[in-house]
Image (cartoon, rainbow, N blue to C red; front, side, top):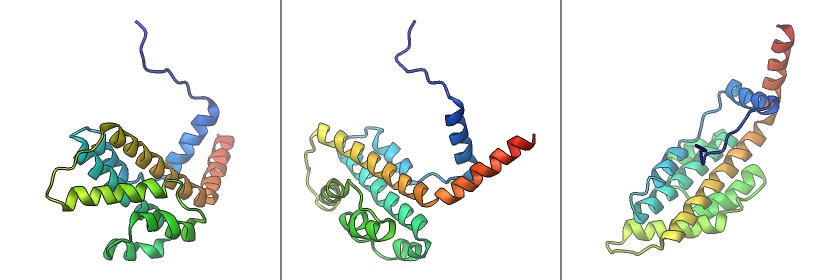
Length: 168
């Protein structure tokens, strides 16, 4: 019978793009592992906490890739609030704020309530699903900023691969 999963075919442009990414040995963000955990649906509370952890790790990873001299500060000192990391700090390093700075800041406040208050806090399931989607988009935005900053290296790798293919 028919599958609900779409069937994709890779054209030569996509094959070249994927091969270039493989050639670059791009290291995936560890934050994606926490985002995956958030999606495992262990309950709204833990989903929210894991999603916020993913957002925190992602911005630290991105800022460290974009400006490696920031890494010791990001890893050794308590981090500023997410609204500052995704806002003014990201803008200073990458020339643009995250379009998700507002929801991520509010999400971190909710996470702090969940983690630091010994009381049951009810979360609306749809809000949790929406928040995980926002975190996902925010992380991919950071990946895009890192790739854009790395575009010269990406271009050199594509040229090198084209030369190798032309020689064979």
